[in-house]
Image (cartoon, rainbow, N blue to C red; front, side, top):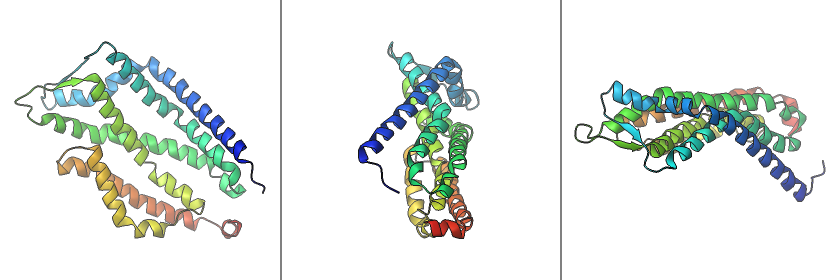
Length: 249
């Protein structure tokens, strides 16, 4: 198959990026209309800390533009969640012409799996990680000081947790895809398990900036399990490849 000129590839890449951005902006518009409801949902971990743990804390606005900026951040996150399947489709459509016909059939599992995995990661972060992390972090010196949290910094940290954990939950999907495309083997993942442990624990320590080993384990243990799941997914995907697939590669 004759390769298309570089200029055509760049033009197609630009078109795909523009379409992905437009989808994101449309999703932001939808999320913007529900920004107050989303704010209440994202504020719930703080409410748990104040009601259940008895920690005095509330959100404050320091500047006149802070409310607008926070609304944009919330809308941007909500728009990403809404538009993610279409964004993943644009990525797949860009690389699909260079794939074999049997590889292009992976489009639907990849797109659906990517969206589902990200959603599971967000739900895990919201219902498992944040209800423990927020009260613990606010609990330091709570009997001596009253936390004065700005709404911008609080929402930025909460959205960072949700986004990063959601992206990390894409690991099994990527493992399946790369194995099916012949770019990854489960033995490679198994051999590099020790390196993965160090990387995952380091990332978990960055995401949960606390010396408490409980909160560190709360994130790192599920991520390590995800890595093990990725190994098994890769192994199963490798077994599913037919002789025709190998010959085609």
